[in-house]
Image 1 (cartoon, rainbow, N blue to C red):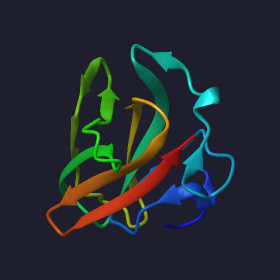
Image 2: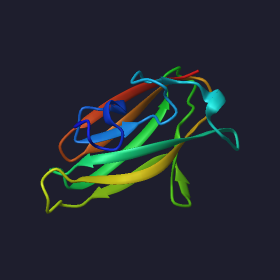
Image 3: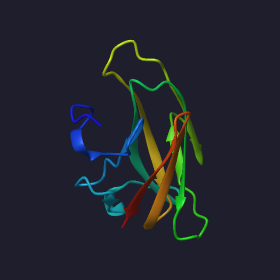
Image 4: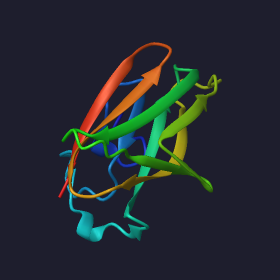
Length: 131
């Protein structure tokens, strides 16, 4: 991920889709829930997503606890909250442009979580810890 895109080295993933844990205080994939606003039975963490300008097509994002307790992450885009986030990256007419989606991720509590990001090109997994 080029360092000039929306905040530099705090982006996670190896492309073509990247996410940022905006409540993290370092590039590590760990953040404290104590700074994240309460939202129902979880915490609503700002979670922006970007797509490399060379990628166009569907993006499907979902996540869950890696403890085996069945707790799913939920994602909010506009007024819609769901366990599955579906995005569409448009073809960029300018090299170096990125698609950007400002979302929130509802984290049900402390623990280790995995986010699966599916595109037409590949599937990737981003793991983070909420303490």
